[in-house]
Image (cartoon, rainbow, N blue to C red; front, top):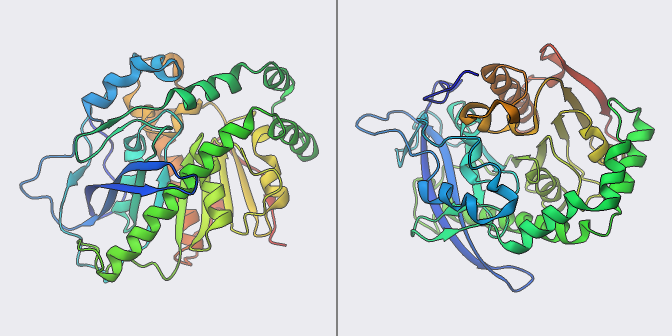
Length: 378
């Protein structure tokens, strides 16, 4: 298996800056939320700057503390160089830049989408990746460390070990017809164990909305930053999520009209059984995951794309495609090819629905990436 010392060169012409921000707020359930976020953005020069640290070593060391992620401790390395640089000046090439959010998988870290976030920022987007309390691991700018909570770890483990879920998993078939997939997805989403999982997804969505509010304050100048008057918020924002971050992405689209479209990377539909997202949505996934999200396309009045990707594993949709040191958790595709697939489909989708460019995901052509379903706007 090929190993990498440095992430791939970004696809765009901008140098990529990264800055970290901490947030504190009280959620609707009265819990005190302490978040962090990495913001990737276009810049013109990195002169005199060393590349940003990838994942903080203190966060990596927390892997042995939770059964949910202990298995990952020996399958990937954080000793890789990024292609972004801390606290650069925002590029002066454009007056304002469009905004996206990235949501990592449950039990992951907000840095796990660095390649995708860097690619998108190099093409002129500002991209925000949040560390969500309870469900992800991160180090705040103030130095405090947050591991996934035992409650979250337990509910994820309980879901995977639930006898009814295991029975349904055994019945999932590759490339099911739409009716079969929708019926299976309905059966999964009505499992009682999903109620608690949905609570965590709803909290993550609330985190996104809070940080979006914060961006409006940065743009208005109410809060001082390099982003004053520089965020193109009037055209709407986009959001992409991997794995457990996917349902958060869909919930945000459903509940917040400031977000105009979303992308789910090998994700499910927890908490979205009867939801109309009212926004264009795209799924890029590995079989048999269509069984886990098919109902979204049935309910979404603005249309949904389902692209199936063969020969890849679940973690190939994030940075582990480059940081992996254990081939057993990797799929068969070359890491660079998989990166190109994820970046191309995500970027083209956002370019079309946010920037109103002619870009069209249906025009992309990769061997083994097939459009298996497209629902039209109602």
